[in-house]
Length: 380
Image (cartoon, rainbow, N blue to C red; front, side, top):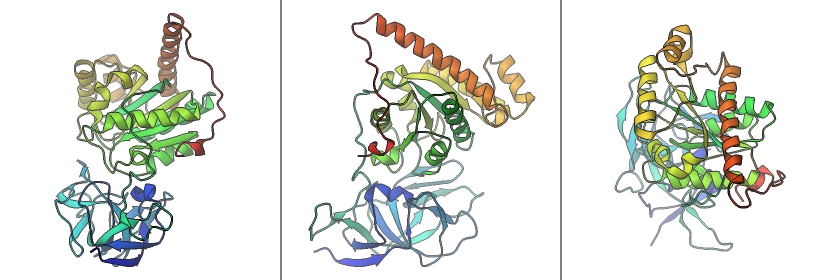
């Protein structure tokens, strides 16, 4: 028999948002130790750094000892953060760690010394969901509840600007945000996506703030953190849902790096997802990373790089190497957003022209559609 307790939450992390939690929840001792399940935990200590959590509105809130937090079981493989896994077994009273700012919970296996150890937290139990009105027996809540469905088939034909990087913190989100802003100002209707990484709303919110008509992340598909084997169907589900908003273009950020452990490679290898790829922006921190990215994109994925951005383009030292030795456009997203936008628009225009030419060579071709679908319908 499941033992239940009523608990009041002090913090509801953004990774739980599909579960639509209220501050008052019912917690049970029947814990499913698997990715995506929602737990209530009590923070065991105070910290002076890496001591906040993003809530379901996107605000960053301080965590203090004694706070009761709703988080999601998941893994993390961050070179400049924490590495952690979902334990094989969990019970009330066990101790786990908070692995990221979005409230992902797991057992920390490795720490980057620059950010110090993670928060330790006492497991209180599984937060229970009561999906049917009048249900008296709850079941462990999972973030796939109310989620955008993953898809085996890509139905969307909206062109995509992929923004990838050689590692985390290489300038991907800055580039994606500036591209959204520039494309919107050029008269295009833009949707945005975060396809890989570990749950956090911040990047998608940045793109919404820049003018995106709609934005979705893998968390909206019920994924706490991505890995090989899930990213292709997740990306297709996201693109199919975003297409309902009738965008002219989708700007899609690929979190972490092209050699990381979050499943970016699966996306870059997928023929259907690359068929809608109109531009490929690469963020890199230094010339060696630029060279490696160019080699990988050419040899491993057979894909062009539309432009290089990131810290490698901060001044002329990197820019001269990128343009002169690699033969690639180099545009800093902060200092030369117009140049980056122009490179992407040229590639986007070429893709659209080729797509129209292909449509004329087949029967029918696409039918123009109204762009009146509201963004609020995306997660319906």
